[in-house]
Length: 117
Image (cartoon, rainbow, N blue to C red):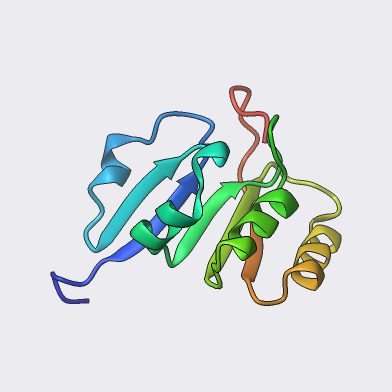
């Protein structure tokens, strides 16, 4: 990747403040928005290739976010993170069936007493 090329990542509703080390990843432009801050105008301006969000939060779930992104023309990668769940493959299939134009996947994070998703 050339120095002038960057990949745009949109982090939605992070459980905690983004660690400073993540803010300075070479070749990666990271923007953080809350769910209700996502608008068509911001999606055009940010042009994310990847959207990263919790599978489930107090205000939205990944299906809500996928629908909103689809309404704003997003067709890139959507990644959800979650604590380990027994039905990850069923959730993955449900989201992919509802939003086939998105490149969707889920990854699990180790259990953390300070994070509920």
